[in-house]
Length: 215
Ligand code: SF4
Image 1 (cartoon, rainbow, N blue to C red):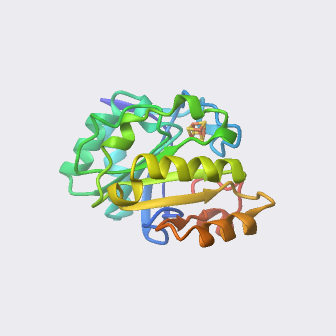
Image 2: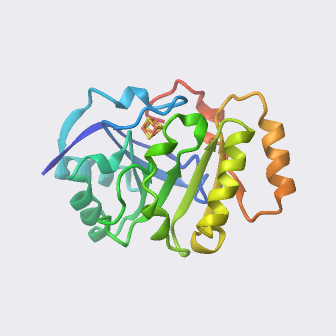
């Protein structure tokens, strides 16, 4: 079996509760969404077909036990599901970064889900697959709200409350769009909310810049 792959690289995890940990990334090609602020448009097309064995060989070279499968939208390729299972069989700690449009129902339960909820400013809020929020697990899964403005923040609070995400996830991540003017305002609003959430800044963009690939 194979997958369409944009890049495979070793770096540090830039986001989530795993931020700062060494992490190998498998970035799959393609996404059915078109978020206004997308920072991964280079994954929409191109890429190369790689066999599972070729990907495993590359990961073996890295010697890093934490692996994130990301995109694009990694779950848009049907072969992603058996690939994730084989990664788990190989005893990798597996993170799945998904945009929230595709059902996570068939993902191997040993993998941890980091699920985006698309907010209004993304232009894709109508396409959230809401049942994904009902299967989040408090011991491992994380939910991420990418916030462009205060309307998005208000939206996030409604969804956090409606799906009781503080209790049903490992972490609720509030992730301001990189480079927005009102970062301090959003940070202040998060602080004053007294919610058990985490402000999530993308470390890799501060270290290597926004245009860097494969780092
Ligand atoms: S889901 Fe992710 S990769 Fe797809 S358009 Fe949105 S931000 Fe970009």
